[in-house]
Image (cartoon, rainbow, N blue to C red):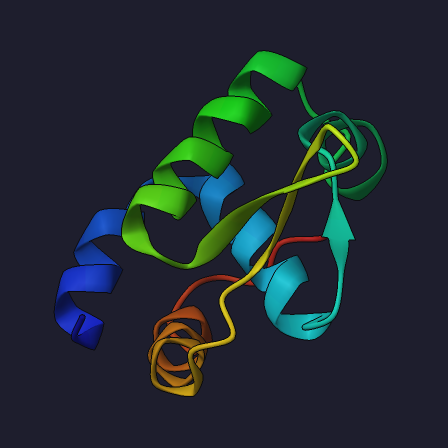
Length: 96
């Protein structure tokens, strides 16, 4: 995925950007969607789940099943991480 495509996909999606920025700043972070909603971004759980689904479709976030729990983490693809970093540098800073 190129930066223009990713930038367009994230445009206007402030919650998606907040989650992606948190993951990029904490590349080894893994959590449930409920934990991400309640602790990382303190947003509505349904909206957080929708944002995680979009980020998963883009390949930015990876969905894992561990001990029967659904977990989310940042992609380990260095090219996609670099692309995300470039896109996020062009986004306004939002507190997480």
